[in-house]
Length: 267
Image (spheres, rainbow, N blue to C red):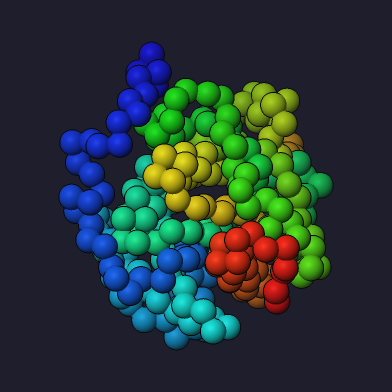
């Protein structure tokens, strides 16, 4: 099969460094958000400034610099879907970012998991095509392996309720059939998204840091699909709280790396 043709070469016909220049002053830790409304609220709250941009045929996406609790962070709105999400990660890694905190919605396969609650993926089922160009074929990929202890300890200290579990990553959301949902639940998946496994693969391939988490939106664990708070404009205050969690994760990650994975969790 074509997806078995993994080529480990780090050099391709077209490479990120052929198109993207390194930026000397770019903050090394970044936050990436899939929701444009939540992202715009972060940018406004932090008075962020544009320092760079990525570009596709669909248009340009600005990269921002912001200051939070004395630290500088990069901010960018990341594109939905595995291929474009990975393309943006490639670009910002090439610009000089070392660590990216990515957050967005997921659908739950377990209806008992509350709307807008936090899920930290520890593995992802690779039901998309992009990741197979970044690592050898396998059904699953580990997620957040280097950062799980830091994440859980930080959320515990913040008194944030969360669930750790496996995500099903698919790039065909109109093909999340009843039978596929059943099979993924049998594989241990508690939620579904469109980018996680591919994001994890590119970060591992490029030897960069990536932290991913979700906030729960629609529910697929019901007789009929329950949209819950999937719309961008729903429960904005709850989503602002989730954005604040992302900022704290980014800040802690930066300290964690500077201090050599210190046991100290600072708020």
